[in-house]
Length: 74
Image (cartoon, rainbow, N blue to C red; front, side, top):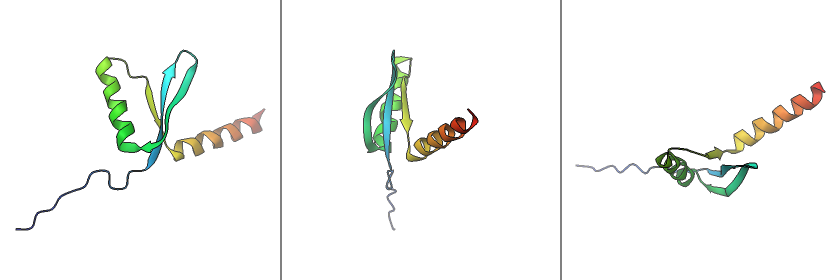
């Protein structure tokens, strides 16, 4: 019998983890594996109030494109 072990998060991409503060969103970690960021994000629900956000490269690109679009409308 062949045993197959599925590796979780084999291609773990790097993401940024942000926390919501009174001054807005602040970086907690930059360039950490997505699985680690997800674990922290999920742990935030244990407090009853999750103030964490995960930011990917795609999120950054979309935000920059939106800012360029809005600048063109002014």
